[in-house]
Each structure stands twice: as structure tokens, then as C-alpha cells.
Image (cartoon, rainbow, N blue to C red; front, side):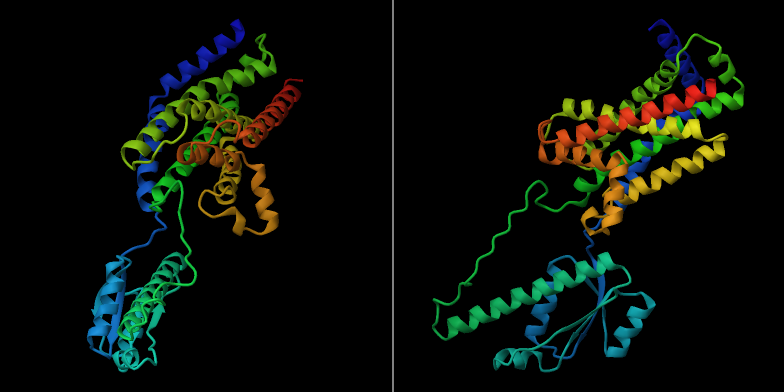
Length: 375
């Protein structure tokens, strides 16, 4: 313990001397969670839309008002022809074009029904999906409203109710606020980025500065050297987590349903796993440039395959299982489960076991690789 304590003190002294890097590791995660927390939003509202209303009737105005009332459409252009709508879509001035036929009101009145065409710019699939779903819901709502009105006029009140009543109750995020889902994921992603990058350069930096040989001649055992390298960064990881969670709560209003103590406890496993991966890279690369490249070769799959931004269930089978090779896949279930669902340790034990196994494997390989270099 005396040797290990001396090495830990040395690492903290080095971190204190490099004040710029220390400030970056604390301040930059805060800026990142603020920027991406506001910027990443899959709930796309206020889509610019052009309307070509050939009916110019009370019924067509009611339909347009129903669309704008959802806040998903903003009517920015009253087109006078179909060609004008086409030009607006091609120029990118609007995301949707709404075409109401001349016989729209007449079709509704005589019972024939009527059609409304909604042309959507699908180059942005997320915005297009939002626009299509909203238009369909408004159409269904207006259809039921017209049907009820006709039944009442005919004196058939008993058929106004639907034969099937599907009641949807969304749990954990009932208002579908994107930040509640994305911000905890951002915390995991930022921790992955900083922990892997900083430790991947730890031994490389010692080698390039010429201080690695001095550590080799000390009585330090390989596992003591590895532990001495990661323990100071565990403290740094907890500092980052505290800053990120405060921003999530105070800025984005993310609810904390579960135990903060359990979150901190299990985050220690994830931080250690990420640091162990960084040490493995540090033992493999020979220069800092190689270390940075190898780090991003792990970081990019971690972001894309973990389920941070894209549902893993939508991935091909090979890439779905490939996501199990990165620790952030399991930590995302932990942090989102505790923060949003109030999950307990008993419910998260599969993720806990996997992180423990990942730590054991990566740290063992890192120690063995470093031991070979000592020989």
C-alpha cells in the first residue's frame, strides 16, 4: 500500500501541474452536455409548411387550424399552385406541402368523403416521420369528429362511441421529453470519451517523457502501477459525473427516480471499465498519435452501437451483438434505469456482472501486456 500510495500521489501531482488539461476535463463535459442536450431533439416541432387551399371553405380552414394547433406545423406559405409547393420543397423553404382539393367541403357534406394530400420532404427521416404521424392523427381525429356530427344529426346517438377503446399510458417519460432520455446517455458518452482518452495516453506519455524507465526500476509490481494510474482518474470521473448530473437536474429538469448512491456506486464500475480499456490501448500504442487513433476506434463504436442515439433493436443481428463488446451498452441501461425508472440493484444485476467481468478481463490483459514489456 505504501508503494501504491506514493504512485497515486505522483499522479495527482502531475494532474495538478497540468492545470489546462485539468480545467478542460471538468469544464468541457459541462459544455458538451449543455450543447448536445439542447441540440439533440427527436421531437421535431414547428415544421415549416406550405398550404395550397383550393377549397377556401370553413371546413378546410378548420383542418389547417387543427394542424397548426398541434405545434408540429407552422404554415409559412399560402401557395397559389402545386408548382409553387414543389418549388418551395425543392428549395428547402418548407418541409411539407398541404394540398386541399376544390371539392373538399362538398365531399364532407354529401358523405362521399374527401382527400387531403400532404407532401413531405423525407430527406430528414426524423422530421418526415414526425410530420407524417401528426398529419395522420389529425386526419383520424377530424374523421371521427365529422362522423359523430353526422350520427347526432341523424339521431343515432348510440353509435357515437368506438367499438374498440385503446388507452395508451406512457410510463417513465409521459410527456416524451427528448432530454430526459438523451441527457443520461450524454453523461455516459462523455465519461467514455474522457476516461478512455486520458488513460490511453498515460503510459505513452511516461514513455515519451523518459519517466517510464524510472518506474520500471522501482519495486512497483505491474498491477500496482496499473492501479496507481487509474485511481486518480476514477476521482476525476466522479467529479465529471457530479457536474453532469447537476446540469441534468438544474438545466434540463431530468427527474431522479432512483437511488443516487446506487448510481454513484455502479458508475464506479463503468469508470473503471473505461479506464481499463484506456490502459489496454496505452499498452498497445507506441506514440500518442497511435493512442488517439486507437481510442477513437473504440469510442465511435461505443457511441453508435450502444443504443445511445439509435435503438439497438433496429440494428442488424451482427451489429446488435457487437454492441455487447463495449461497456457503455450496459451502463446506459444502468443510468437510464436508475434515473428514469428508479431501478434497483436486483433489477440491474446482469449489467453489473458484465461490467465486473469486463473489468477483470481488460485489467488482466493490460497487466500481462505490461509485464511482458518489463521482461
